[in-house]
Image 1: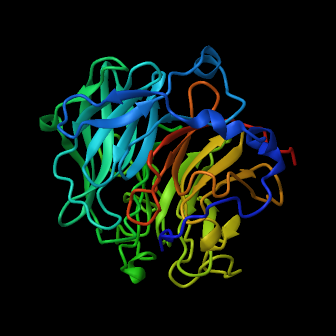
Image 2: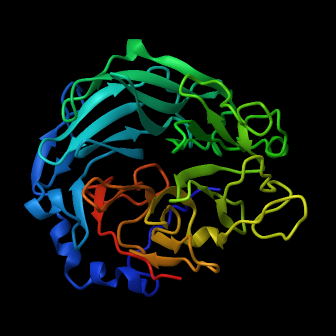
Length: 388
């Protein structure tokens, strides 16, 4: 289940009180980019427009939304590094680096990417091993989804990788035109977590020996991590399509998941936990599955990337075209929506180094209605959610 091609032209409901100040009248007038920058090392010409940040936006959290860069094509993952970020483009396999002062340039193209439908170059993660900096990437080939790593060279602002340095970390994850998962992240334990989709093979999601519909936990070298519940790479199962991974202050993993027709989910992940798909969707109260903490109708969410800051979860909504927030400390968490219809589809959201949020729109992936400057890297104010 993926986003709808319909794009809301205006807000479809009241904006959550916790972010009301960020959406005050006229706040979006400052969003227009002002300076063009050209990605180097590529024949495709201008890719991103960069709005030079003011001193306040580059050193402290902003009070209103702004557009940092434009012109991305089917972007999927944004990962902060230094004062900037690396961004993956799903369909062409390119990784771009954006910096507050230098705009965007191409870091390199991940070799072997075979895109089509929801498959292609998806999640990115960065890991440093001694003096070596690695870029990890989840991508599709003609036959599977896999995780590779490439050596990053240069300093932030001038990063590069040589495609010839690509090493396969983990392969054999089911691939299809949809339900490919694709989010990867290093946890507080230093292990690599990988969200996979069921690739349309529903019955494999609850099979411990199948890699589809799972969250995997790996060492940085790609082996099953010590302490995994089944002695394999599998950490949790019974998922349909995991596209968001983040940890709260207690070290608990949270994951967003696309439902089918009825309920999308936000799950609190337990090692060895079975989340019920395909036998259960949403809250089932079943003895053989763990219920989600939060559910949404797909038209309101279709959740992809998530971030957690001060135990508040921020969830990027694709078909829902909004940012959801949820306080994980509440005994009865009630998600609140913001920016409904303001930016179109939201694919990823991360905590930025300046105390803001960075979010990627996803209107050029074939399902949205792109505007002239799509897709965009947004900077959104970070607001504290109400205490429970």
